[in-house]
Length: 230
Image (cartoon, rainbow, N blue to C red; front, side, top):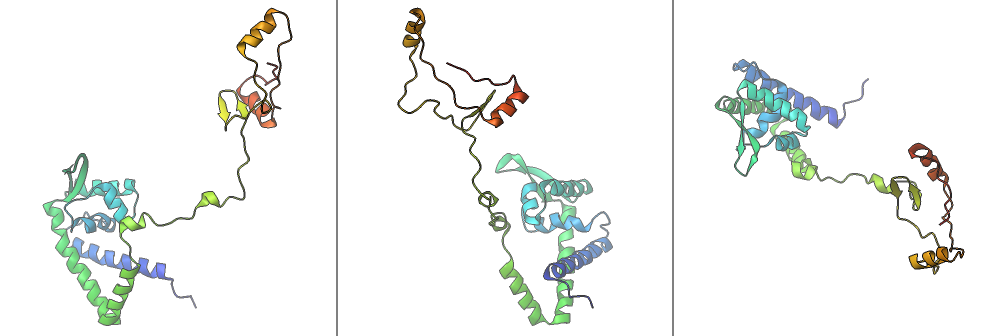
């Protein structure tokens, strides 16, 4: 015996049956160029004065590209049009044409038929309980977009190894570290010039040890890095 379907499957199946019945009613009314997927656009335009494509995508929980394709299909069929947004002339609003507006009463009547059929099957009181429970679970689209997601940045096994002081030709990874002990001053330009002029040994210092990562990267970006004496 097969286990009963889970809640996700039940909701998806009921949604498909509802859209299928509405689509059949629209087809029977002469709108043969519509597809069930077009409901993702039309259901949000019936009660608004126009929406942008990105706003439609958020409400239908679709990508912008998929919504733009559906809007283009409906626009070519004469159901919607795109007009400049009065609030932002660079944006365009998707609005119903008179032909598109004719779909709204047909779709509303079809959905009422489906709800009446469900009420006969489970009872009107049970249907209202179902509606109330779903409304408590439902969230507006703007709140859905800001739901908390797991923070993967803090789930790492440990701190990232420091790469400070590893100088690569053309790039510096991390802040540079001091190459001389604290308190030891770098010889000034005048001291260096005076030492060279009189033949004295100029103060010397060595750089820090070259790391294996620096040596490996040097082979990729240029000649091998050699220890310098300044």
